[in-house]
Image (cartoon, rainbow, N blue to C red; front, top):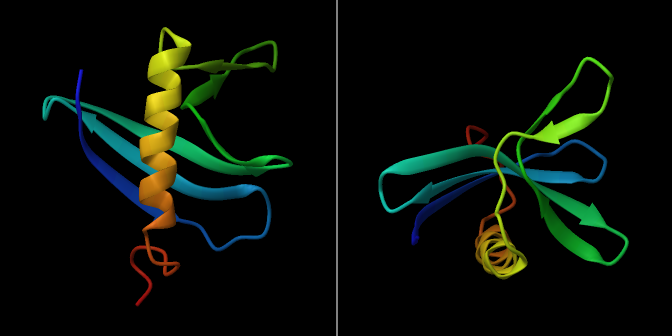
Length: 91
């Protein structure tokens, strides 16, 4: 599966959330709302999730293995670093 497009929307609010990302695979499948989070050891990605009735969060979509997750995170964080700080729609 090839990552064919990554779109980053940086957020300006204070806090750990730094951006929302949309990732397209093979020009045929898209995943919205991947989050870039600033953690204690640097930035990482969080997959889209929903809150269950019990109050916990479950991923809606996620990589099956750690190799693909690592490659996906690397590509997303690279694109995040190359995206200007002006959030989309604010110019």
